[in-house]
Length: 193
Image (cartoon, rainbow, N blue to C red; front, side, top):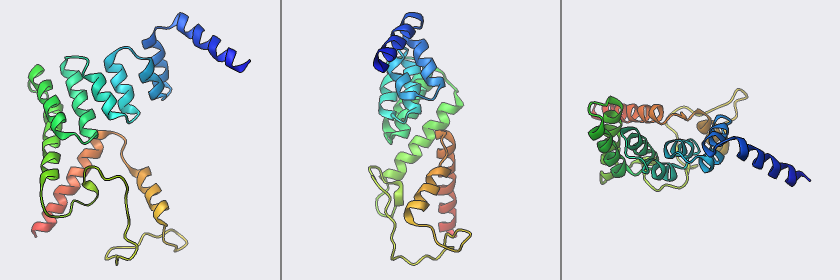
């Protein structure tokens, strides 16, 4: 009986709403994967995949349009996916179609800087390596910094520390990248002293 109600609802919505309208309803509810499947418009579909963290699919959806905005968004998706050369090419296409677009130029510079950081040989890039699939903490290393403690004086476990870190991660790619590059620039400045 419940399955029949779901089918009736889907059919009813299909009668009154276009696929893009259905996608928009899912998008506004935060159901990004369902929205991406419903949307026929490539820009909305790409935005839904991007919000769902499916950056490869987002880039491919944006590639179905040949506008400055589509290439810019495709560049953002490639950047988040770690494909910096593809990101740079997408930003270049966006800048060709809309010259002087500051956000596209800034993001292109970020992608170029990130590409340069990945091509540096020697030296430790920490957790910045492409293809890293998990974070590993050295439990035997001596900490020169401050220990992380809670009010009761107990140190946080690795899992609690990872959860705390994930809660503090910025969700907007622009904010995340800005903070990341500011940190890297500060670390370079300390190394030069």
